Image 1 (cartoon, helix red, strand yellow):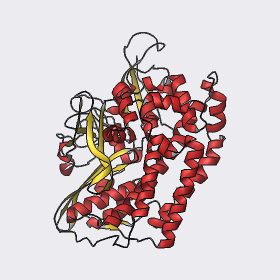
Image 2 (cartoon, rainbow, N blue to C red; image 1 turned 90 degrees about the vertical axis):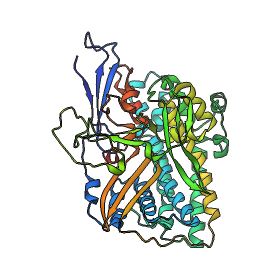
Image 3 (cartoon, helix red, strand yellow; image 1 turned 180 degrees about the vertical axis):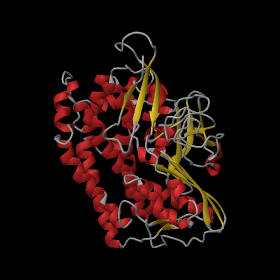
Length: 483
């Protein structure tokens, strides 16, 4: 039996197609399950090649335009790579401000994903027989649901933080290798305090129905189940849907979770760097030298798997055996998953660690980890803002005429890395691995499927809604993926 091709997906940033093969070529579709999945990023954009031959500082202008929804993360990775090239980091105030603007973008992305991309699928008529359907449809139906009227103004108000701290969003130039180019005045800091307080109030009223600290303190599935009983709020509604549809049993992927470390502070991170390898039963440190990219099944120039600092992105549109523009990044030769779930699993949050130990990465755990980060990060933002002092927000960076740099940050969707080489004052090589490159990678030269390709195996072949739930649980950003 031939493949089923789903795509292009709606409510996904960029272009995405997924091909599904049944577990057997015999018989009818009915009752069959997915035996193999192939994820296609069908749009080549070529930003990495645009940078070759340019002044290294041009990257600060060009790279953020890869994406309009995670441009601050791209700016942060570029600034970190240039800072590494120059051998300096941001000032303490510069780091606090950089954390604030990156967290603002990441939390806004989490909010958009849950309310506008993910939950509207459960308001479809296919779920009319479910007892929770009337409430969910009234709240989350695309365009018509009450959530749209609530969340869009709240998101817009929260993003005003960007205007106060970064000058504009997207594509700010305030993030620089030595810190933040713009020092907020006292009145602007007070305004940001007000915006954070307003956003906290919205989350506690609409999403959680409880204080952020109470949500962040939930330590087990038993505590979560007891907490949600009789509680109003959109998280409780999602948990009811997840239980009714058994979402915890679907979408399990590689069981290896990667975090580059999120929100630097005091020589460490709010959420630490590392890899939780469940098959090996270990949590270990992350070394950037352990990353390679394999282009065997990508429409790119053939060659061996390479570290990104040695990589190229040269298109070959008619390459035999290829099915995507996305390379296959690997950590120590292994497939890994990144994102909010990976960050919290590596950080050791008790609730998330219990969920991945028992069920790995799945639809429930990915979405829950994303919402949990709203409760964890907003109080940290309040702390970074309160800690700003009269010290400098930036130090000047003198870029050398030759050298290499790497910038690793955690975007909303996970591990984002930029690798840069400069020679004679010009960019010789610039390679990017985005979070969705990790999660939506194709097979490598050993025919090992990527994280989503693994997560789709075993799903009922005809249940295309369930396939969409699994795909959306990763919150893909396809315009970043092909870099």
